[in-house]
Length: 355
Image (cartoon, rainbow, N blue to C red; front, side):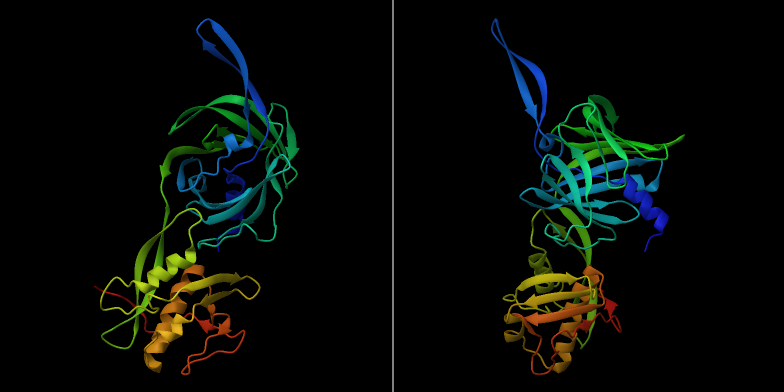
């Protein structure tokens, strides 16, 4: 776990990107021949916080190692979006909701290295990121009691990705520190500048990449040449609103070598994955084919279960995995557990697979 100071600093450095509705207007002129037509363009919070699917926003950091970051929208549903924020120190997840003229962070959790849909999680935050009307002088307080104010609608800001005329939001902290955030139309957050006297930290947009999020996973498989288990480092891609159940099942169904055995059959599905935060146990429900298609004695079955438990447990960073089949505790005839009992992650005698 990271030191408390680092987590507090990272929290100060990270805000978000997402979407909402309502109101700023700019006078524009459309000229058709000799006719000049004056119109008003109605801009919304959604213009400055687009829920961009399958888009990686890469930011340069200046002044602090944690100022560098990447963001990716993992899930979007209705008026909520879940963002993964990755920097050299940790990984955050934040859920943003736009409602009643405000964009609010309603859930936040650090050390979040796995994939889990938290859009409907219980609210643990109420930090207002932006509030309507979008006009200079509009002020509100964040959840720490600091004052936030829209201080410009067209502030010029230079970043490695280009120069923008951006919406500027200034946060004045109670001890004299301040932070300015800049949001460009149709892009989102393009810069954040934190000041504490002469100490300045910048987070500047460097690149926008239309891509899925790639991450590393340790996948475990029984070995075919002897009774044992080996692991492989692999990369997986996760796109906005993808099913992590399908991705993990596919990893287990397709070992990268003929010398490794698939721990689940091609017909087996993962019905649901749930991380129980009270007991810190991963609860995984499989389709009945996990047992029906398993053709193994007790020794191989142990290695199959070890592979499943290690793959899932390591990815979700838990030690206990509770496996059910169509809602009932795992029971094969050779091996069984009672309701509430779990299998444990076990690295004993497990080695990296050498092709």
